[in-house]
Length: 115
Image (cartoon, rainbow, N blue to C red; front, side):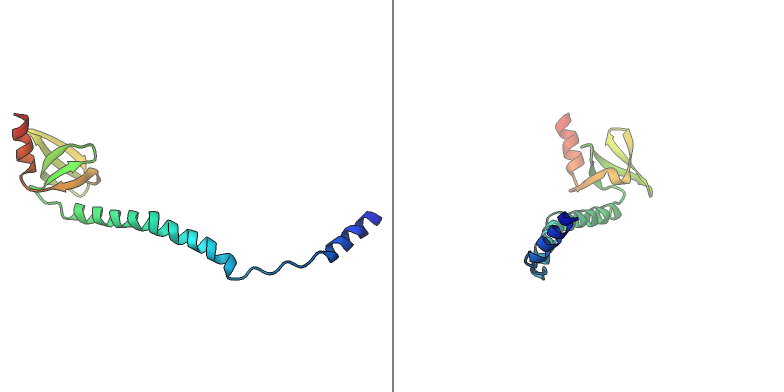
């Protein structure tokens, strides 16, 4: 039993540690803010711009897919886009696979460069 008493006396003799204040919360909050501005905010801005671009798709728009295929929009659906990728060559891709809208004339100039 004597070994329990000595432990209790050692705990009582230890100085009390100060309670953490607002200073202890500053570092975790700073890390959270850092990650928000570095990762979360730019990603949400890109997602918003992508949704706006997909909503602005119209018949005749020239687009590039995520696979790098350049084409002209022939038909639009809620989920799919039909693209003309060459003379009488059509492909159908999912709407979210459209990566960028290209300026008018890009599709024609790319077709002339192949010939």
